[in-house]
Structures are given as C-alpha cells and as structure tokens.
Image 1 (cartoon, rainbow, N blue to C red):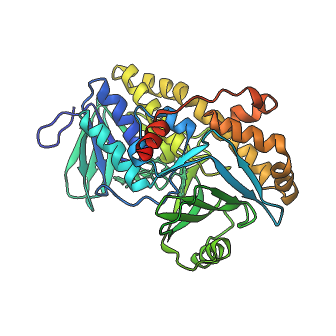
Image 2 (tube, protein in one colour):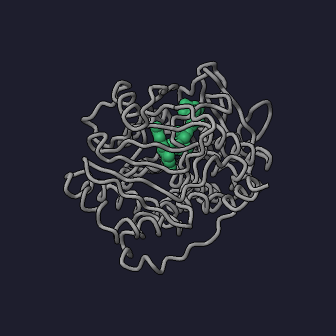
Image 3 (cartoon, helix red, strand yellow):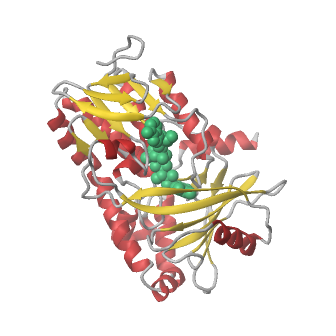
Amino acid sequence: MGTTGGEQWDTVIVGAGQAGCAAAYDLVLRGMRVLLVERADFPRVKPCAGGVTIKALNALRFSIAPVVRCVVRDMALSTDGGTVQHIAGPAPMLVTTVRAELDAFCLDRAVERGAVFSNRGTDRIVAVDQSPSQAVLRFASGASEAARFVIAADGANSTIRRLTGLKKVQRAFALEGHMPMPGANRRQLAFDFGAVQGGYGWIFPKGDHLNIGLYTQDEDVNLSRDALHSYARTATGSGLLDGVVGHPLGIDGHGAASSVGRVLFAGDAAGTCERLLGEGIHNAIKSGQAAAAAILSAHGCPRRAASVLRQEQAPVARDVAACARGAQTFYGSAAARRTALAFKPVTSAFRSGFAAGMTFRDIAATAALYSFYAVNPVRSITEHEQARAV
Ligand SMILES: Cc1cc2nc3c(=O)[nH]c(=O)nc-3n(C[C@H](O)[C@H](O)[C@H](O)COP(=O)(O)OP(=O)(O)OC[C@H]3O[C@@H](n4cnc5c(N)ncnc54)[C@H](O)[C@@H]3O)c2cc1C
C-alpha cells in the first residue's frame, strides 16, 4: 500500500522515538513494509534524562549495551528537608543513556532489519485521510504517503492526534540541562522530592556529564530556567549548567482513545508516560510493540486492530492508572512523602522491585513480599560491564 518513490507500505509510523522504533522493529521482523516518517534528522536531541529501567531493558528486543552510559545501583532520595535516604544494593536498578544516542541506536536496529527512514524536515503533515482500505498522510508540499495502517508515535505534542480530531492527552512537564563532569566517576543517582511542587529535582550521571532537571506533574506549576539553575547550583555547588531544554510528557492515557480507524496511537502520543515519576520509555516501547501486534493480527481490519490494541495495551494502561493514584497520594502532602521515604520496607520494596524489572503497580500490590523478588541478569548490563572491564 502507499508510495514513496514507487515503494509500497503496509504501515507508516510517524515518529522514530522509542514507541515508533519498537513498533517498526516488530513489524519488519514479521516481513511488513514499514516507513518511519520523522521531522528530525537522527541523531536528534530529545529532552529526556535517559534513565532506562530494568523492565524497559527487558522489553527491548535487543541489547543496548553500546549506548549505556552508567549502571545505577545507588540512589539518594530526599524530600522537604527530611534526611537523605540512600538505597543501594548489588543489583542494578536502571541504566542511564543519552537519548540522542539511544534513539539513533534503536532506529539503526529497525533500519538494518528493513524499515525505511524518511526525514521530512519542515515538510509538515497537514492532513490524515482515511478510506475503507487505507490511511493517507498528506504533507504541506503536496506529497503523500498511504498505508494500510498508520502508527502515530509523534510524542506528547502529537500532530496526528490533533489532525484526527482526538482530544490532547494530559501533560506533565520537565526541564533539564547538562553539567560537565571531567574525570569524575559518579554513579549515584539523586531524586529530591522537595525541589518542586508536585514533582522532583534529579541528578543522573552520564559518565562525562551530569544530567540535571526538574519534573512536575502539577499543571499549575511553571518550571523556569532560573529555578533549574538554582536547583543545580544548590545540589552540586557548580553554576556550569548548559543546554537547558524543556518538553511536555504525555501522561494519564488510560481511558483515552488509542485508535481512530486505521490510525493507532503509541507512546506519549497515547499518554502512556506515567505521572508519578514521569517514566515514559518503558511504556513507549510496550505500547509501540502493542500497536505492531494489533496490526499483525488485524488482517487489514481496523476494528480488529482496535480491539487487539486495547487488549495489548491493557497492562500499560493499568500501570499508568496505578501511578496516577500513587502520584495523588505522594504529592498530596509533605508528610506522606516523608513517611514513604523514611519507611525502610517501602524503599526496600521499590529498590528490589525496580531491580527485578517490575512495574510500579506490581510492586505496590506485593510490597510485603519484596525479599522474594527474583533478580535476573540483564544482557545489556552484563555486556556493558564486560566491555568496560576490558
Ligand atoms: C526532560 C525529560 C526527562 C525525561 N526523563 C525520562 C527518563 O529518564 N526515563 C524515562 O523513562 N522517561 C523519561 N521521560 C519521558 C520520555 O522521554 C517519554 O515518555 C518518551 O520519550 C516517549 O517516547 P515516544 O516515542 O512516545 O515519544 P518521543 O520520544 O517524544 O518521540 C517522538 C518522535 O516523533 C517525532 N515527531 C514529532 N512530531 C512529528 C511530526 N509531526 N512528524 C514527524 N515526526 C514527528 C519527534 O521528532 C520524535 O523523534 C522524560 C521526559 C522529559 C521531557
């Protein structure tokens, strides 16, 4: 279906972030002809702290060892003037990456399997037309791309959502910058839940630099560059913060429509980022894979695709809903935050659960059993650490 210079497409994917690349990879693996339409040339800057949790590493179809910057086993948590809690242990809780490197790496994996990447630059998508047999993307230049299905993985500001008449997803917001760390070897990650109303400040180590940022899920809070500079100075003693960028996160998509006819939504465009910590990479991957599974089992029928998509995205939707409830309690009062962080069984359950690759919802439901959580080695981490040891 559809054409780019005479090519025929089964699926056109808009956006080559984590959701788009995950969908493309699964589709090309099953022999589908896939076009990835992007407005940016890769590698491109994507505002993101690049923290990839164990569950996200487990969800990926391949190892990302070459683009892992740090393996994190140690976190410092603080809130509202309370004592800093250290949660550490032998098992990694997450890895850090630079999103430009991670996304280019994942795009390369999809392209080497057969996906076609098309950077459209400023040639904007201006319409999405649907007929009984295909969906057609129309560009400002007059060009078009037609396919049996379209996956909209174009992030929190989704153009495709707007063009198909769907309501915007809820949005959180985050602002970040980089601080050089020459010669240093910091491996500890820090969260300060007292730094911002309805959110937190973070410091993520990336080997040669620190990524420092502020996140809020409270729509009444405006994060400013000044606030970020001031947080970075207080937290590190240095004023050398550079490259400050901000971006919304598409949250609370549980219950929102995830398809319109032949157009399926994934990642932040579907509101799959979770509200509590603003973790979006895992759910972007899972929802991209869900969209691919829906298309593969739809045999061309949009109603069947919609129904499989709902089933496949249900675990993501349940976790997003659980995180939204968690955020309400956690950000609701300073006392709730202080109690949660000072209560060892809570922090230990989350440490062990993250290390075991569990979702927030599963950890919250089984926290009392945390000492039985099974921690398995993760290929991306063992390969990264073996390469560093040489
Ligand atoms: C500052 C910040 C820090 C964060 N830190 C973390 C973290 O540490 N860990 C974590 O798990 N999550 C984090 N998140 C959330 C995470 O970045 C997102 O949830 C995740 O990137 C969503 O992936 P996606 O593929 O849905 O969308 P995106 O990664 O936003 O990708 C969308 C792609 O679509 C392209 N695009 C957009 N519009 C168009 C168009 N009209 N035509 C063509 N292409 C288009 C964009 O160029 C982009 O490449 C953070 C978010 C922010 C803002």
